[in-house]
Image (cartoon, rainbow, N blue to C red):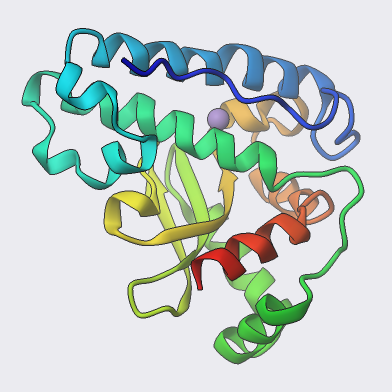
Length: 204
Ligand code: MN3
């Protein structure tokens, strides 16, 4: 059986200061993400026919998963996938702008990086309650900005997430309290556009 584990973080908890604070990073990674990993492993325990699937396979075939564990796999598997991607697309020392093929595709799809940034920020701010904002490659190979509730994600819709922003209060409340737009604005200071670009190049 497969046992899912917390992925390594590529930087220390305080690396994203002052935009994402050390305490939030520590609790978010060590407690919240670990809880999703544990919940996913617990849900799959004893379900040998599903335990060997990759996380992506599980999330893209939720309809076939037994009712007794479907919600647990959706919430905890989604949580594990989303946070694993989130840590990867963050960095303390990234470019402030995409480059190469992704840069061209953003220009073509949204009419420029600034327009993309505005639309993504509005989508993230407008997600009512807990959830995520995404830049995805859809089934027609087009870039699209989307949002999902809770720990749902684009994989469940057959789309490929390239960039994701966690807008659950646990991701920002200690530093930003009710000011989600301030957190979203500062997120753009710590995006790892190299990783987002390679996500695009792999999926495209
Ligand atoms: Mn989170």
